Image 1 (cartoon, rainbow, N blue to C red):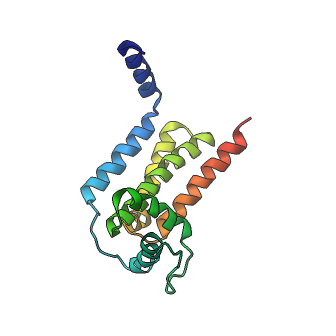
Image 2: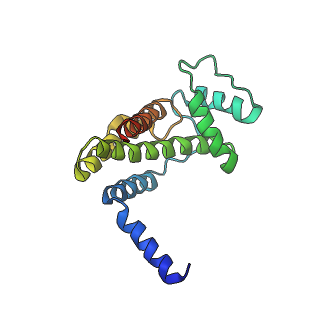
Image 3: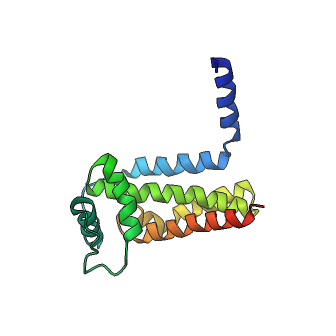
Length: 166
C-alpha cells in the first residue's frame, strides 16, 4: 500500500467518525484534565473496595472485604487489566473507573442512535449523563456506583445492537 492510498483510507475513516463522538471525547477528557483527579488516596468507602482489589491483584485471591456491601467482581477484574500495564496503585484503580465511564458514554451515544435518536440529541443526552452530579462525584473514585451503571449501559447497547441485527 502506497502513501497516497493510505492517506485516502485514513481520510475516509476520519470522515466516518460521528461528530458527536468527537464532542463527547473532547469534553470528557478536557474535564478530566481540568479536574486532574489522580491522587493516591481513598474517598469515603473507597478503602473497602481498594482492599478487595488489592487482595486479588497482589495476592491472587478473590476475597471481597467483609465491610463491602456489594460484590464487585467485574470491577476488580477490570481494574486488574489496568494494573497489569500500569502497576498497582490507587491512581490506577481510579483510572480504570474513568476509562470504563468513557466507554459507557460512547456506548450510550450508540445505544441512543440504535434506538433512532438523532445525532444531536444522542450527543446531548450522553453529555447530560456525564454531567449529572452523581456521575461527576463518583467518577473519580473506586466506588462501585459508576462502574455498575457503566456496565448496565454497555450491556444495554450490546443487547439492543444484537436484537436489531437482521
